[in-house]
Image (cartoon, rainbow, N blue to C red; front, top):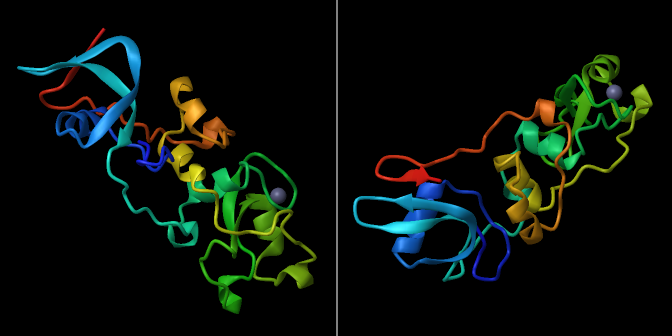
Length: 186
Ligand SMILES: [Zn+2]
């Protein structure tokens, strides 16, 4: 879903997109070729990318966006921020919680389980372990990729960042979303 400014802001179900189009609150930007949705009374192309007609205020400051493991991993390129390992990822608090560190974007990093055990409750300078990238709030596009791990190619021109890595660690959050009265027909 694009904002009125064409900025990607959200991922929604096909059904939700169809409702927004029918209510004329959004316009169709991209559809899936040769695929239609049909209800009792309407036939429409299956929407892939829609644009809201009116600007929707979205949180500018990604610092306030909810912190999830997947969003942290996506921001950090699905790699341990201490040794670059790509597997067995956990979340590390740079300043340990036991030492007063908070669960904020600037204090959490992707960290493999062995590094996490090695660091334990030590402060970075004591453990001599410092994250490769200074943690900060992620780019807004990270949340799009987190919401839809298998980003359809038709979306790519609308996304500035393609951070799809470590697919094995990604749960499928992409909802087909053709519910109730709507059915997808080839
Ligand atoms: Zn590591």
